[in-house]
Image (cartoon, rainbow, N blue to C red):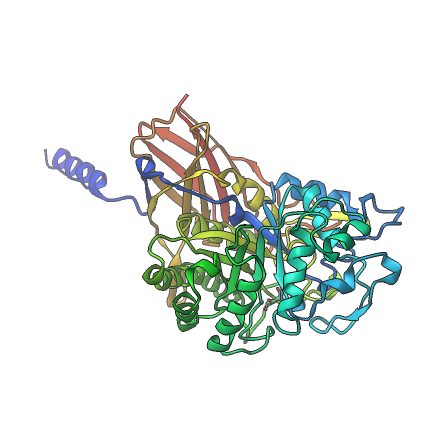
Amino acid sequence: MRKIFLILVMGLFTTVIPAQNRVVLHPDSATIKISRHIYGHFAEHLGRVIYDGIYVGDNNAKIPNTGGVRNDVIEALKKLNIPNLRWPGGCFADTYHWKDAIGPKSERKAIENLSWGNYREDNSFGPHEFLNMCELLGAEPYLAVNMNSGTVREAVEWVQYVNHANGTSYLTDLREKYGREKPWRVTYWGIGNESWDCGGHMSVDYYVNLYKRFATAMTNYFNSENLFRIAVGPGFPDYNWTETVMRDVPARRIEGLSIHHYAVNWQHRSSSYEFNDDEYFMIMEKAWFMEEFIRKNSEVMNNYDPEKRVALIVDEWGGWYDPDPRGNGALYQQNTIRDAMIAGITLNIFNNHADRVRMANLAQTVNALQSVILTKDEKMILTPTYHVMEMYKVHQDAMLVPVRCTSEDFVHGNKKLQSVSVSASLDDSEKMHISLTNIDNDKPKKVEIDLNGFNAKNVSGRILTSGKVQDHNTFEYPGKVVPEKFDDAVLSGNILIVNMPQNSVIVLELSEL
Ligand code: AHR
């Protein structure tokens, strides 16, 4: 009798203990679209990003290309549905003069790359090559204007050169003469880059005054061209910068505010592929900081723009480590499962803040920082980050399903972090996608997801993981870290149980049919 009583009590006990890792979805409140532009990229004239990585020259017989741009890279980026590409910098943008880089290549002005190693930049990849490449990719160009060594006039003329109708000025005549008849119609324009640092070490008041001159002159007075002008925001927790821009720039002169945040420890930059548990945890802490950084910037923006008209744009993000000399280029680094973890939690953060975050740009596309692609002569490999971006692309332009997530801690010494991150969306065909990341490099996680009314009949999924968090793809073994089919998600009524291995990114697809 006593035994039966004990069993009953234990049974009762197990049913009332809440799951350690529990997610509740709210499909009925899916009212905000996740902008596809959150899945954007950034390519700067730096190291081997542009030359070698993207552009190999018009007469390269060894590497198949279209107008000098590598075909393998074009195909790989198209498979990500790359929505936009930011160019030409970064810090480089604030020393860049676009007129040096148009016209016949033999007549273009070679310059010194003052930001990234003082090497000769022959400007053979200029605005025409970049904008034509964006057309090939089906991606929206995002041009960064030189606000430091450039002038308002130079910026105004750049807009006219690329956007205005034929015959309106000597600039559009020049565009035609140089081989482009129709305007490209560029929407996204960044005004300055890190103006508190390499963009001129400006005070925020100085920046705002200068910004107003650029933003007012870059389009006609009423912005009837619908330019999307993006002001520089902070790259560290300086919320006064955000406050000043939002307060002092007239609403009709700003469409976006950019912030930068890298997962980096400047006091201790670890190797990109040989790192220990302390270094891993440190980077995860920095990656998770994105949540607070977005939340606090959004709170400030809400005070001035409660309708959320001005977008928050994270136009530089990613992991930043010691350069890997084997890559033979500034800021070249390997890309491991650790980077997949950064991408997994960061993209979930962006999705979950889709009401305010409407564009982001991973730094940098090829051969620098957290690249999706690495190249070596005619070879190309896809990194773990590429695979996360590819798995998550199902969220592009889908409706955000709000989530509540409680998870066990990822404990390291006396520090801890949330181990499981999640976001979800509903696409046009009413399919639900749930992306989950478990950053714990020691413990698997059993996650219970309450679908809360979404009547799922089928579930399928893919997983990206590997035995060690340092695992990565190489030119010799490009298939070490690739997504695989995932079967360990089981439906039980309205509850989905997902068994996540340590260090894993999983994307599930659920349908009601
Ligand atoms: O992405 C590398 C550099 O990081 C960019 O040029 C600059 O904007 C940032 O500091």
